[in-house]
Length: 90
Image (cartoon, rainbow, N blue to C red; front, side):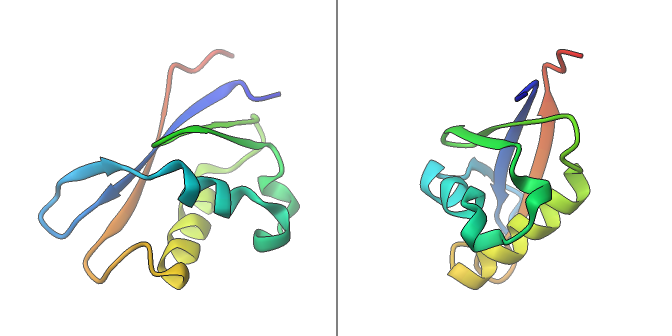
């Protein structure tokens, strides 16, 4: 089910990348917060790491996570989110 490994990074205004804390990722991944079934196939693993199913669209995931992190106050003005897939195991 969780065949894709994703790196979830916070990029500050200066371009410095840091792994997002797992509690941010876990907070997003709870369905009662996102209310979007497309993200059900996600599993927070560690700081900056998320596993996902094949049908999770990365562009929507990045946009939704960035929006959620901003609303929660995790991302500050000038910060952005970067979601990168690595180690594809198809």
